[in-house]
Structure formats: structure tokens, C-alpha cells
Image 1 (cartoon, rainbow, N blue to C red):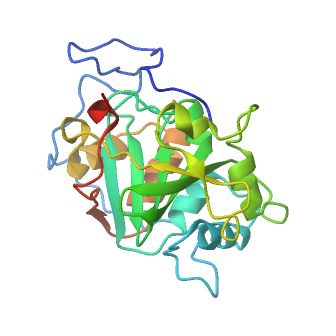
Image 2: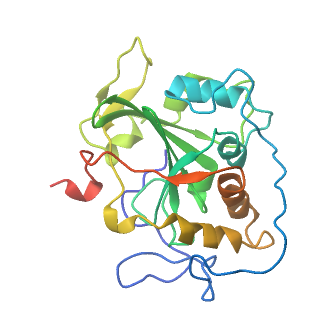
Length: 255
């Protein structure tokens, strides 16, 4: 996990509220619901379907890794997103305070909610090659880990999720943002750590229709990875608004 609890450097401007913009966010971006043309919709080509024998809605890190292992290799981040069952419960945040920082409204961080598990993705920057995992082991406590993509599904295993975030002096890198870290149950995940879950602050949460508008106007010639992630989210089935439990604090609630 890349440590980034402070706002990262941006390739674009910084707004008055501290939100970083990006070159991908154009001035002529349409408002949600604006007619973008009279062309007939094209059926998407589904590259990564839910693997046979899997629900497409993992409820634990172990199930999520098994899902990834069953995908066609090499597996990339868009493939993972595309393969999830629909409707996809999604929240987009423009907060730059993360190891997967958003870079303005057009380049948000995406949270995908399952029962007992949250996976997070970035749409651009170094975080776009990562999938972060958070499995609930209490109402406001999660076991955390991450994988870097693309990867060979034949060699990845659950232990790799936790190895990726190990810190050199013990513990995990996650503790630099998430407090109260303790070793997780070794019978569940050896070498893993649990710590506070953190929610996106309300004023950073984006309207999904606005995010869809950015997705519709993504230029694959300029940013193919960003467009592939957006296509995997919005062109693979229904997307609905997800949310964090209101009991989960944000990083700004820490004293």
C-alpha cells in the first residue's frame, strides 16, 4: 500500500476547497442528464464475466481472491470490476486523502460495497493499478489489504493481499491512516491486521449521474486505463448508489 494520508501532488489545478483537478477533467463537461447525441447505443463486449461457480458478490477477502483467481489471465483492474454481479453498489468520492487518491471530480475514488466487504479502486494515477480490500470483523473495524494489477491469477493467493501492505517494522502500512491497528485472528488470516474502518466524508461524495457523464466523455486516446475502468463500471450492468454505515467515522473525525 502506498502511504498517502495527505493530499498528493496533482497534474492540474487546486480548487479553493482543496480538491485537486486533473487534465482529464475538461471545462466543457456536460451536466448530468444532458443529451450527448442521437447515436444508437452499442452493446458492450463483455470480456470478463462472473466466473462459473462464483456469485460475483464476494463477502470476504478470501472469496474475493478466489473470484480473481478464476478470471482469465492476465487479470487487470477493469476485468475485476467488469466481472462483478449487478446491480453494482457504488460510491464515488473526490477526496485526495488516500493511498488511492482521487484527482478531482472527473477522476474519483470508487468504493464497491458487498455484504461484509468493501473494495476500492482509483480511476487514474498510481492508485489505478491497485485494488484495496476491507473485510468487516466488527461494526467499524476491518481487516485490510491490497493487490497490484495486472497479475497472473494462477499464482496469486490470499496471503499476497496482506504481504502487499506489510510494513518493515511489523504491522501494516494501513495504520498510517487507520488507527487502532491490532493483529487479526491468525486462524482467519495469518499475518493480517485489523484497524478502524474509515468512510468518505459526506461533502466528498459525488452524484453517480455526474460520474457517469464523465465516463461517457472519457477519451480512450488520452487515457485508455481511465476509460477502461469507467467502461467496466457503467457498461457492464446496473449501478446503484452505495453508502457507508453512518457509525463509521471519517479520517477528519480523528482528534
